[in-house]
Image (cartoon, rainbow, N blue to C red; front, side, top):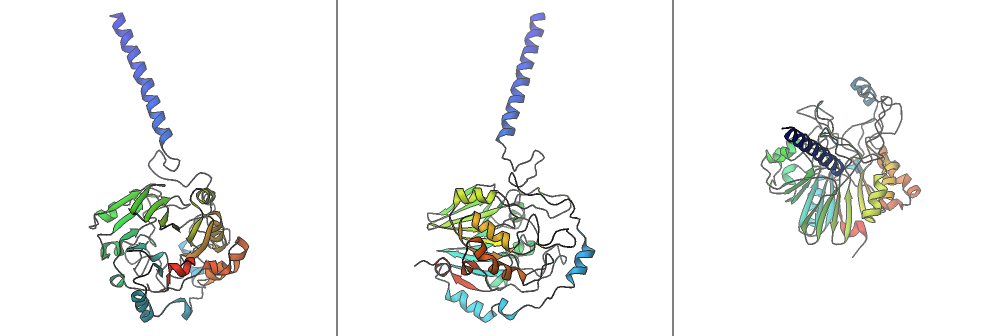
Length: 360
């Protein structure tokens, strides 16, 4: 009987040790950006949001009224030319800006759309910032789309009206962890949730990798960082295109540049950076680069060219609406780029990939 009790205790002790050892191993295997409570965080060493930043709709709306909302004619391509160019470039590899972070990228027989937002406002129902420029094409005018890339769940990127009405639900959807349900319940069949560094081979010439960015996620008051966010690296026919999620600066970009660079062309956000006087700092946001910081990220990525995006569509912050492209161009040489390699599109502009990357 005594021996039986002793054996029982020894077995319990062994099971206890095994359990703790196994759980320790499991914890060690979890990537840094996966937290124990099931939420996510930015890469190690990323800047954190200033605790002095307290959002105020009252101050934001007061300051927003001071903005000059005049949209220069040259900011938007005439609709007839947009439609003509859609036909003109149909057999070419091209990039076209629909507005904000929505681009069409055609590579061979594959057309990609990024963060498509076609609604009049960036928010739930009728709420949220209103567009001050229309999409270059209506949703029912876009060409057949094969790949739908979604970087994160903020309303100016994940537009549920667009997702519900999207005309090509047979497209391959590639998106961060825990966002798939928004697509499967709306009739999409090929939905691929991705963690950082996951790769998908589309065909023998095209591969897409999901990479870290410095941002965050939320759609409701109670779901902060419960879904992932990130950048997409598109590798096509020996060319590399990086499409950034909204991002702030971070050491991760030097790491990505060393691992994946050089990059041929990077799409990086240059708007939504000034929240002064709500924030105590002008021109500084932990999670949105200003134009100069975007060029710095481009340099860290060893990118030959940078396209400035995420501006000229919604008022999300308090910088003058046409300031980002001017600062972006003016600062290019300070970061080792020629002015022409800091690229600004007009809404509705098409450019062939050959022209953008200067190859035959």
